[in-house]
Length: 140
Image 1 (cartoon, rainbow, N blue to C red):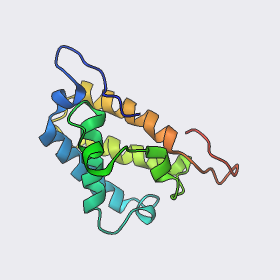
Image 2: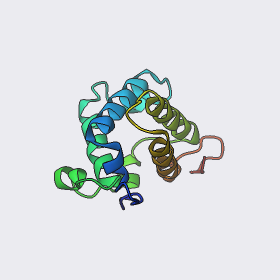
Image 3: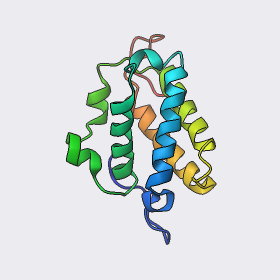
């Protein structure tokens, strides 16, 4: 889950988005997460470190420097999220926050936003570890 996203004539997705736009996206995203009734309860009240980790992860995930690896080790995304009940509904809420943040970050072009959203949609499905309706993990 940490291989850089596609390279094309414009470089990696990180190169095409750029660090400033990615930082703006993460800031807008966590502003939405803090207000979401499904997500806020599983996040800390102070989202500063969480946003730093997300920015570091996305930087490497999109083909930029491996900041997350350097600061925190291997992401082990699923293992790090297992203590939290990630339901299909929460995964959809997370994606809705990301979609809104992408829409509100005009520095990120439509093609790059679509590519990033598609990649994060796959990650969100992978993070689901609980489905109260069936008692087990289930895809979106």
